[in-house]
Image 1 (cartoon, helix red, strand yellow):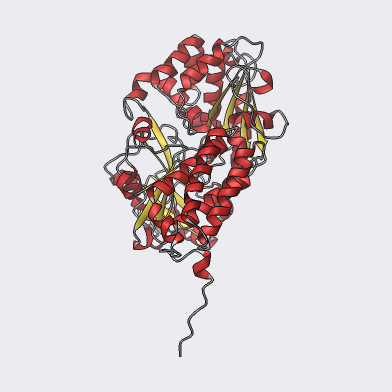
Image 2: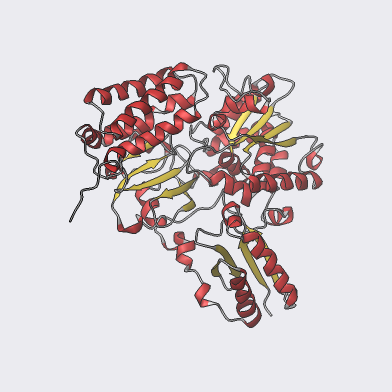
Length: 537
């Protein structure tokens, strides 16, 4: 018989649906039916977004969605044992892999191994050219590695978009007896889950990228700062680090090069502010996660006062493929000024939520309707927020904005972490604004007055508006609050609250004015909900 490989999606989401139990049960059934000589079961992640645990059977290329052990047994008995596909459990491949039929094709660089390998097996990573880039980098001079990253045009994928090669170069030129590489895996932006899936599905690519970065800048120690709630990511990273040490990719004299590098996972407590790079450094040092005054910047004075490179997960995950395939290859993807790909998290009122990696320059409309399948429930699209909760709310007139750094800057839109949040016409603009500001008020560390008090006052104004107690003066005051808070806050949290708030006021001012006139077109505000019902006979 032809060998069969069964891939079972075992990630943070599917585990809640019983994925781990289903995987173990399938392995037991395969032994029971003496199928183990020809059937291999691999636990991977993110085979697709569906209502159940996704199972992919190869080489038949059949997808199933299961919700019970009985359904798992049916797949084993019918498909694996008898060769008969189970039609009632089958999932349309277009729902799992819509990119195959869409005009803009998915280009998998960062996510190339996700759903393909067992993330807890280092040999499967090596079999797909894993650590080949590290070997190549160690045969280059450190400044040649930096030059290759600079030439590739790679920019930070965490939101700021700062050129990665320049950041490395600043750290390399700093004089110190110790330097550090820090991977920002805190990922606190609501709606963002790409870094989690990268770490769950391909932890070695993050490790390899960090080792290469360490070699390039002269750092011998690295930290992966990850939020403590990412249990599966932490488990996979620790296993991958242990295996990397055993195979000689970490530790002393890596691959006989004379270069040494150690790597540690450090858990965060889930504070949004610790996504800010200097607050993150404070947390690693065991202090309260509060931002530092800049300058000096981390490449000069970072962790423990030493020069430090801080890159986020997606940025680091690009590095091995750039070194392996070359800067020119990377620049052939995307746009001239924004080369490469971007991993987008598609969330909200769409038919298909999930993660997709696309070339830079794809439009908001293409992502939303091509990969997201349009607005769910047949409702009308009202707005889209790009870049996470600190990002821009845009109207339908900007759906054709290309998702690259220059185009979005020219259109006054933020790319941020890559979240594409679709919002239909059942939602109220003022209620959304209140929710955004309540989040920032809750996550403010309270260190500086503008952020602490600005978010509080903004919430009070918006709360009044949802009760139909607002005035036209309140709307002007709200704008002033946003502008002053952004101009005078100590760190990026307070400096960014004006982006979502002002984009809502500017693009949807009419709805704010309607609330001043005591009307909520979506009928969701508290004043509407509290109206007594009219008695009918």
